[in-house]
Amino acid sequence: MLIECQDLTKIYKTGDVETAALRGISLTIEKGEFVSIIGPSGSGKSTLMHILGALDTPTSGQFFLENADVSTLDDDALSELRRSKIGFVFQSFNLLPRATVLRNVMLPLLYLNIGEMQRKQKALAALKSAGLEEDRYYNLSNQLSGGQMQRVSIARALINNPAIILADEPTGNLDTKTSQVIMEALCRLHKNGHTIILITHEAEIAAYSERIISIRDGIIESDKKNAKRLN
Image (cartoon, rainbow, N blue to C red; front, top):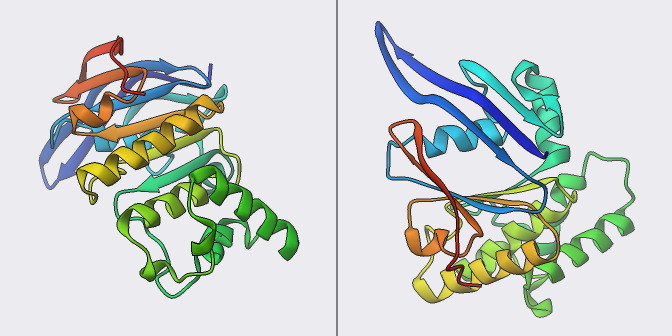
């Protein structure tokens, strides 16, 4: 089992007011799955994404990643977990605008005991897997289109060979045609064995995954295999 969540709750407090963002979420995700977590604004999907990405901890319940209880880890251990086990793809790309594509992808390896040449080789391999054109590798990231920037973001997520690729609304800033290209890239990565968890509010984007978990008001409404997968 790659991921197991047991009765997760998350309560936010503002003064004397408590808001329950998650209300007893239990789920499992196997290695190699492509799962979409879908729901409207305020449904709790972003809160769940932050917990699955080790960016936050639950108020109660347990979250296991590769049999390790993430719920008990301190900030330093959570940071190491994110670095070594999770690759993030964000809606806003989060690239350094004045750094080249190659440097952006190499960045997560900067503080590891890896030589410059090895870092470059790993970055080139990740960019190839993400499907970015080779003639763009030495462009500055702010010289790219939105779709190209997202492919750089995917390559950066791949660089440490993470257990999970966590994609948070990866097509949110893209037009329909470019969104299709990005989702096809994620599908290819899944076919190559990567585990992908996609957070979205769009049914047409969730349709690319093999399993769709629908969340509303902090609870799971449905968890179904996707018989009509687009790719």
